[in-house]
Structures are given as structure tokens and as C-alpha cells.
Length: 300
Ligand SMILES: Nc1nc2c(ncn2[C@@H]2O[C@H](COP(=O)(O)OP(=O)(O)OP(=O)(O)O)[C@@H](O)[C@H]2O)c(=O)[nH]1
Ligand SMILES: [Mg+2]
Image (cartoon, rainbow, N blue to C red; front, side):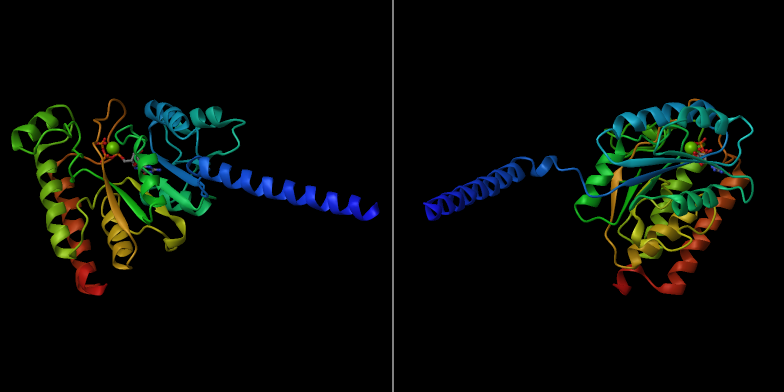
């Protein structure tokens, strides 16, 4: 009698166990693609006098990133226009939204570096905060990371991308460039130098990439150096992407179309002198990298 009871309870346990294993397998199969990704993304938003843009940008990121585990870090250089005050109010009580107000060492690169060092995610992203770069690219860039990418770059100079005010569906022509420029405050000189300069830098470095002055990145944090970024407002990008590419990491580009600034002021002047000075700095940076370390392709 006792033997029968023990035997039947053993049999029923076996049945329950096999049913559980089967159900788990089935559920895993069905929900394999619905599983939340095993990462957290820190979105760093460097700001200087972007009071009229940053609120809308934060709101659209909140909508786009609803399904992801993420944190927001607005890094503001104590903007006189009160960007920090606005964001402090907006972020009140929101657990994963942080405001970093900086009072010393002003600058875009220092701000992004501080955002990275304060971030808790294992993936970092940053972009301009004047609404010129669409946050809708983030999920696309994360997908590339999920597929094995280490650094993903928003790129104007690949098919599907376009300069400020441009139409990504139109083939390149200088006529189209002039239409695009009429929609933005950029000059023809800056457009020519940017497009031509990026080609020259690609050749100097022997890189697979096409946009070395993008400013829109998603990257695995464990591959970053400390400090992650070195250089000025534009040339830091060259050093950053080329060093990561040279180290043998997977770097990919996704097409990006820049949207003309609708409010606020540009921090990079459009004067001929300033454009030429930035271009010279970028060229020197590329040459230094090339002669210090050789062509990217050759070191692999
Ligand atoms: N924290 C911080 N952010 C900055 C600083 N300078 C610029 N930024 C931010 O860096 C981004 C790029 O600056 P922009 O003024 O848009 O420069 P740009 O894209 O060359 O110029 P536009 O033609 O106006 O788009 C923006 O999000 C700025 O708010 C700075 O000194 N500190
Ligand atoms: Mg901008």
C-alpha cells in the first residue's frame, strides 16, 4: 500500500516535471524574440543653451525608448538660458533620468566624457540636442549592436543619409545640395568641406567609414578608453571612430539625415575662418593618426 502511494506520487512528479519542461520550452520558443534585451542603454544629451529644444527631445526619446531599459543623462554646462532649471523640473521624481549641471571645464567633449563616466548602462549613446538628429535612429542602432556591432555611427554620407535639409531619397547632385542649404543656415563652403573632407579623411586613414564628423553614436561601454573622447567639438569624432575601428572592433554606419535647427543658436560659427580652422584641425588629426599608427586596414 505504502509502496503504491510512493510510486504513484513519484510518477505524478515526473509527469508534472516533464509538463513544466515542455511548457517552458514552448514558451521560450514562442517568446524568444519578445525577450527583453540583456543590456541597459545610457543616453547622454550634452546641452548648451538648448532650452527650446531639449524638452521635446526628451519627450520623444521617452516615447521611442518605452520598451527598453534606459537612462537619460542631460549634461548641461550651466546654460544661461535656464536649460538646467527646465530639465530639473521635468526630471523630478523620474528614477532613471539624471541632470548633470557643470560649472567648470566647459565644452562638448568634456560634457560627453562626464556623461559616460557617470553612466550606469553597458551601452552608451549620444547625439546633438538641437533636434537635428532624430532619436528614432536609436532602436535601429541598438539592433546593429545586438547583431554584433561594437560602435554604430549615424552617417550622412551613405545611401539613405543626407546633409542638413537634404532629401535622403534623392541622388546626390550639387543642385540638390543648394536646395538643402536653402533650408538650413549652413553655407556652401561648409557643405563642400564636410563632404570632400570626409572623403579625404577616409582615404588618409584607409577606413571603411564615410562620416567622420557625425556626432551621433551608440557604443558598447566596455570598449571605451578613459577618457573616452579626446579633441575638439568636431575632430574628436575622427580620433574616436578611427581608434575603435583600428582596434579591430565592429564599426557600422546607419543612414542619418540632419534636420535644420528650428530654434536656438549654433555653437559652431559659420564664418569662413571658423570653418577653415575646424577643417584644418580635422585634417591634422587624421594625418597624425595615420602617421602615428599606419593605415587602419594594414594593422588588422
Ligand atoms: N554641454 C555642452 N554642450 C555643448 C557645448 N557646445 C555645444 N554643445 C552641444 O553640442 C551640440 C552641437 O552643437 P550645435 O550648436 O548644434 O553645433 P552644430 O551642430 O555645428 O550647429 P547647428 O548648425 O546649429 O546645428 C548641441 O547639442 C549643443 O547644445 C558646450 O560647450 N557644452
Ligand atoms: Mg547642431
